[in-house]
Image 1 (cartoon, helix red, strand yellow):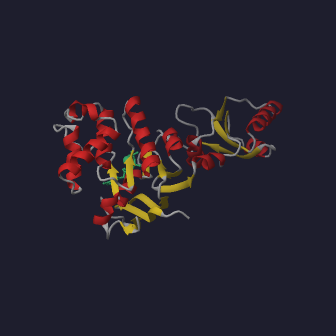
Image 2: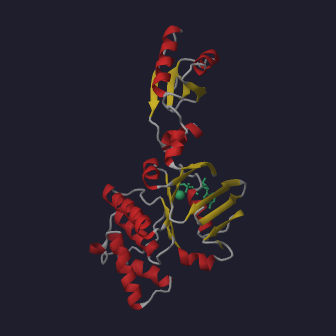
Image 3: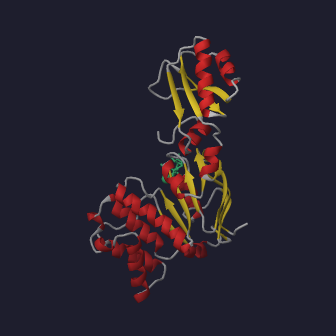
Length: 321
Ligand SMILES: Nc1ncnc2c1ncn2[C@@H]1O[C@H](COP(=O)(O)OP(=O)(O)OP(=O)(O)O)[C@@H](O)[C@H]1O
Ligand SMILES: [Mg+2]
């Protein structure tokens, strides 16, 4: 077993009666890029806030580098970098001055500080604009300076909370490449939250899927996708007839079939969700059955096997609402 850099144990965060994070446990191994994938309000930022010491968990605990995130917070802060979802930059200062400020917070001074600031600004590709005021930057440039600020103390573990939201494609690519290089060249461990499944699929060694405060799946993207078996077929029918469902489920290439609520804008039809053990065969068998039994098909969707489909299959809804 490789050593773990982070351990979250049964984390809970309550706001009154509302449970924002509900019994979340996971481990991040040293050198791993770990993704938390989930829709708006799933509990991603709240999980990061507890693990980076912004506020304590209602119950449960977290450890980073073997140190408790509540008891040993001062030491924990030396080994983590946090890039929050909300930008934490002074608009009237330059990018360089902003990053210097964060470096000073970590006790860096003089030449060591200047060198470190130049290094991290170069890393995110902002050297040319570093002396301009932040208020003159595009959204993507602000994000890149935000990332530089999180890197200034050379953290062993970096928290990146939705770093690409509202970012142009060029800055987005820069951020991706920075994440990949930090991990590859420095062995930096990264907790990356996103609601874009393509990002999780591309960047993360393992992905935890979070919904309504609960971690509902955790594995490599490949294994999560393989758990779908032969894929998902969604069949739009006029009525939810139990005999039809049972007949479809008994087809040899079908693993299960269940009626689900139709998405918005699809009134007047019901959706039979079919999990196939063998995609193409299942499709042929379903069509053959409907033809023989004289069942009208209103729509037919073959869902591409990806993390979006994994999420849809687990929760019955799509990641982006
Ligand atoms: N201070 C607060 N008081 C009450 N509820 C809160 C508070 N902060 C967050 N919540 C709720 O907790 C839940 C989780 O919020 P959180 O910000 O962790 O979600 P998220 O996964 O980061 O979402 P997003 O993708 O939109 O950033 C949400 O339902 C949110 O409304
Ligand atoms: Mg968030």
